[in-house]
Length: 411
Image (cartoon, helix red, strand yellow):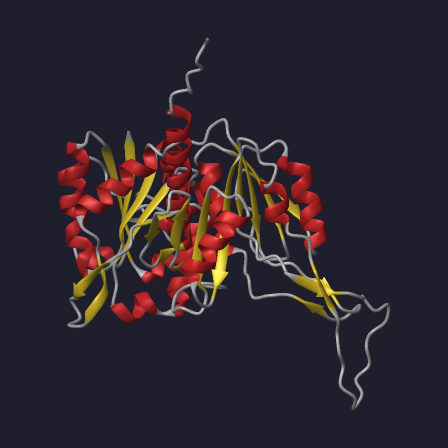
């Protein structure tokens, strides 16, 4: 298999030379693309000697003599023949270009032209890594399916301490193999995912809602589709893009979500309910805008339909996962919901905790099982949480199916 390896400008560029050798030991053909800044840290000759391949350094050739039609479309040729694009180290600059669709050199142009899977291993100063712009760009790449190998923590070349060191070679190689040989362990399954908030109208102008961004549910839908499942995503209002390979059903209110879920539920084998459905709605929707006065306003609320409990009560052999967003007594409330709603697994978190909950790209969750076990996961991206939840679904369903049938006594 052929890997195109992008090397960008940073002190960690020297580590890419050893990475080329290790990839070759795994019997990959490696073609190296270097940015202009990368050449300030290591020479193209080093990679040419190690890879035995031409090293690409410019979009239109290295000189006027090399600039021709072949060099002008070389990024297309490389894009078509590569099985995976690996960028290590990946600077904040190249990550931003990838996320925003900027194509002003060979590597960024290659990224846009390629349909191959992508792995990036960031390396930069800790403040650059933690900057909201970088984290937003990382999240955007992960939403599009890019496998981001999180940087290590420790002493950095700049003298600071923190996250930003290029991940170890073993970790990067593991990401390459995992991406190239990704599981299709959900092939044949139909997965129904709910995501986002609902909006409950008070009048034509105002409504009740919550802070859910839909990011967790969308991450689950995307991960399930990549693992081979047919995915139906029932989504409340959100600005997120529909994941590739997912059929999306847009709804606005809890009632509309209930109708959509009820319609789609019969065809699914797995239901993952990550939406933050409103528990209450105004008992009366005013036909006209409520005018402001000096008097107090009392709004009567009524409970919405409990979608999860309704569908799980008649789930049959379907596997049902619920999500619980709590602010206190997380474990106690999660277990109560697990039992009361006939769930197979529940994913719970404290939405008031740092780096967790609504509108974050990361999450800190605990998994609660029917057998009484619970597992708390460390803070990780929502894309990683989605994979862990799907891992558990596959494991639990496999264990259930492998149980021997009960023997009947014949008298």
